[in-house]
Length: 362
Ligand SMILES: *Cc1c(COP(=O)(O)O)cnc(C)c1O
Image 1 (cartoon, rainbow, N blue to C red):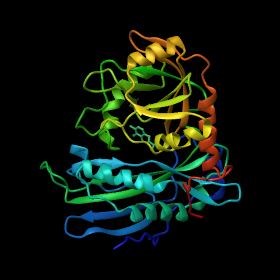
Image 2: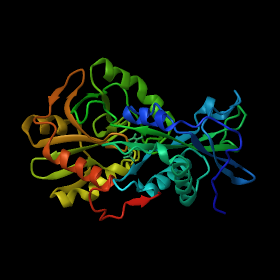
Image 3: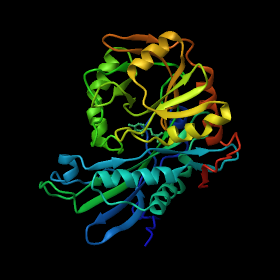
Image 4: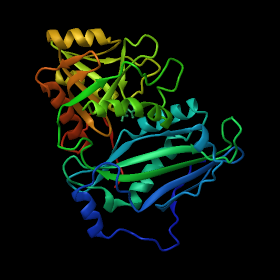
């Protein structure tokens, strides 16, 4: 039976004033401020999913023995709600996030949440907090669904009690300062994911493993890490939280094929679909670090960019490692900016949604 998400708001609690919200929207940052409500649902081995609800945003009480605190049985998603000029509010391909959430759940031995329940939970939260959806340029309401093992038990097996929740945060541009081409650190001593591992699942554990290399990137003045494959350290996989594309001088749009250890981005999939409209030939195949080195030096690779829901499309300016310094000439490239604009225009309702990607919530 489908879950319902009714608002359980009996106790008086603090609702932000319109002035508070306006102040947040004037400078939202990324993931700093949260809306008045959150969605919660419970799952137990015996009863399945139950008690879907929208309740005041606030801390959970978690037992110190809760399995997630010890064994990281956790998954999450990230998607956005966009306010269009006429005031309506829309989601971008939320079923794709729902399907990925179910795949992540399977890999982490968590219960699957049906697509309709996932989408209903997102819509319920947006409808509970409509004032929080910003309408400024490049602004949106970032939605963060997640699921955690919540059984108080230190034995090692999939938990019999699980919690699902969604929180929401108004956001502006992910990288401050507008579209600025970023420098990327190629990690040569760490990988993000191994064959047979959890790289294709959106789970906190992958992020935990990426933090040390990410810190090394920061220390080198770079804003993200590029990870190579875990077997040969030769094939380009992706950044810590974004997929990567190159545009060749002969009009191909190449991204690493899904290897089993790459996260299948909704943005990645959407870009592959709009490529032809922009006159680019999409190609999913293996892309080696040597091909990147040679291509950037010879000019055969004209543009490189990263993509994901949070930062949309981010041009890459330069790659560095302990032995590399590769300047991508002319970043941000023309196609990179066209692809970025095309996605932003569809999401913000400025362009016809010919793919049927947008879903109206309000
Ligand atoms: C979420 C994520 C992406 C981007 O996926 P989108 O659906 O486009 O936001 C890419 N790589 C990793 C590792 C991710 O976690």
